[in-house]
Every structure is written in C-alpha cells, then in structure tokens.
Image 1 (cartoon, rainbow, N blue to C red):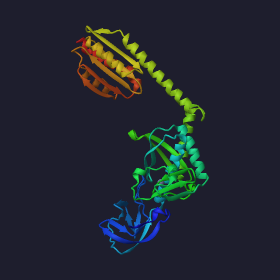
Image 2 (cartoon, rainbow, N blue to C red):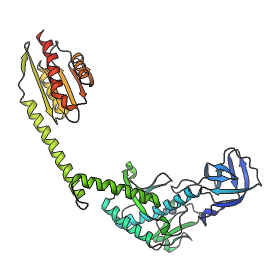
Image 3 (cartoon, helix red, strand yellow):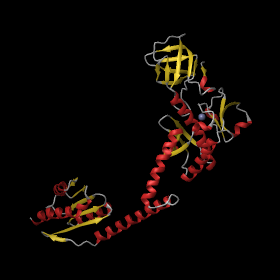
Image 4 (cartoon, rainbow, N blue to C red):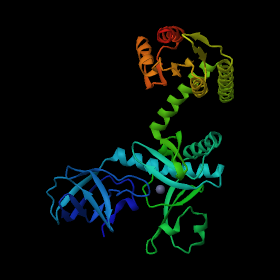
Length: 393
Ligand SMILES: [Zn+2]
C-alpha cells in the first residue's frame, strides 16, 4: 500500500514519488499527498511531471490518480504538485465544518449531522432539523471566538475500546473493524472521528460565516458556510444588503426583523380584506340586459381569481354572460358565456391582443392576462363593446 502522506501531514504540496502501476489514464504511486476525497470532501487536483491530475480516488485500498494522456511507466521517478489553493481551501472548509457543527451542537444538543459537502464552490453541513437564526448567530460568535483564540487542531489515533471515545462524535458502524480510528480535536471544544485533511490551528480559518440555509428535504436542512476571505466577503455583502433593507423599511437594526414580520402580517390581512370585498362585490352585482341576455361585468382590485371563476361558473349556468377582471400586478380577464351568441374563445383573445395580452379557453369560458394593470377598465370597456355587439344581433 502506498504511503498516504495526507494522513499525517496536510501541508506537503510538492513531493517526489515513484510510479508503481499504470493502466491507461490511471496511475498508482508508492507515496502520495493527493487526498482521494472522502468524508464529504472532494479530491485534490494538481500535476504529476507537469501532466494534469484531473481526479484522485480510491479503487479498493489503492489510490488511483487520473492523468489523461500520461506516458508514465512503473519504476519511473515523478515530481508531483498539488493545486495548493484548492487543497488549503478544502482543509479550511473541513476544519470549519467541525467547528461550525460543534458550535451549533452547543446551542441545540439534539442536532445531528446527516451529510457534509466540502468543495471549493460550495460548503455545507446537512443537519437533521432546522436551526433558528438566533442560534446560528450564537454559534457563529462561539466559533469565531475559537478562531481568534487560535486553538490547536490535533489528529490522534484511538483504539476501539478507549474509554475516551465516549466524548468523540463518531459513527462506529461506518468504520471497518480493521481500520484504526483517527480522532480530530479542536482545542478541548470538539472531538470528532475523521480521516480528512485539516488545518493545524484555528486562526488559519480567518473567519467562519453562515450565508444560507435551505431545506434538504427528508435529510433535514443544509447550512451553507464560508471560511477565510470568502467568509469576510460574504459577510460584508450581506451586511450591506441588510442595511439597505433597514433603510427601505425605515426601521432600526434591532427592530427590522419585527418590522418585516409586521409588514408581512399587514399585507396578508390586506389581501384577505380585498378578497372578501371582491367576493361581496361579485355577489351584489346587477346585470345589464343586452339583446335579452343578462350581462355581468366588473373590475375587482385584489380579487382572488378562484372567487371570480366560481361566480362566472354559476352565472353562465343561468344563461348569463360575464366579463370580470381581477387586478393585481397584472390584470387577469375572464369571460364566461351561457349564450350561444358569444364564443369566448373568439372574443377574448381579440380584446387581449389589443392590450398586449394573451390567453384562450373554450367557447363557454376563456381567460387571459394583460401586462399593464392600469388598462383594466379600458380593457373591460372594449370587451363589453365586443360582447354587446354579438348579443344585440
Ligand atoms: Zn474532518
């Protein structure tokens, strides 16, 4: 088996090695510092004798380097170089994940990790249930204090029956019986079984920041985080956005969450009131009689389309014709006809076209929208004229 340098030295990025086997693009060496990926962390990339290493992975117990177009032969001495910026970012990310989770776990002892993902583009930990932003805020304060305190990150090997294993975050069933247990500790605040690559001191992380949390379905909630300069950049950018929101709402930082919650509540109440008003408005409409047919029409700001559609359904069953417009950000027009003289499928698209809108339907019911809601009344007049022309004949 090759000497897997990354297991005891995460900082070796340039090294000499010897090729032991080649099979097309696949290259095996007797010593390697290329991390083959694992524990949610993606693999290293780099070069061997100047040729790109596009992927590194375990095949059985062997670490296989994918080097397209290589001309290596067994026994050849080669010079290897890791893409160090990428590797260091992954080391920071992996250490950041340990630190973030232990900090969140202090706030919520029922929290458990479902999954981890560490790549240069994205870093997240999926936990079994949601965590409030208030708890994330406290966890981040703790984690960033640990970064400033420059705690030592240590790797130790423990036996399966070591009583100290009790304080270690570990999924023993996932570690093969014959494999030794590597435990990564951060100062005395966290002990976790892990065979990945990590930094040596927490200060190397610079900063840890959570910039997003999203549902991960049945797995729980994905908490996305950043480390180092990327964390600082994200924090600055998000802080500026928050300040803009605070300004826009005329609130204060300490009150803005409450302000927005109130606004949301008021908006919902207003929408509910408009819906009720529209329902009443439709219910109390008086029809005109055109060519012997009852003709209902009206514009309803903030109306629920379902309410209007139900009214149309009822009135056309009584033989009436109705033209209703629900006005929101756009204007939604519906035309229902209980009269053989009015084919909705023909009349409505004609009027919609006059106002840059589109729509369609069946002979007894059609609907569509126009982009400029301020033209609703005008559109209704045009529609009424068309319908009246048909009913009068
Ligand atoms: Zn780790």
